[in-house]
Length: 110
Image (cartoon, rainbow, N blue to C red):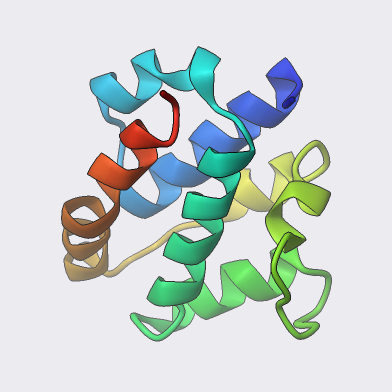
């Protein structure tokens, strides 16, 4: 079970990668461990998209430790400053991420 703070941080992280989306925002109450797993895979898949993504992921996992499954849930709840400072400059990365991951994020909330 995710706390409201974790759900809000998870949504803000999703916004960093795909932009604000009303359907995902509306699904925020249903965010759960499956949603965290999808977003984690989305971040990992986009690490090669541009340098900004690499820097964000590196800051989230405290200086670039090796990513292992479940890392995202461990940082939710204390990642707000990192999320607020994130700025992805690659529009193409955002379009690709939204096209690839939006449906899976929504399905994870059922």
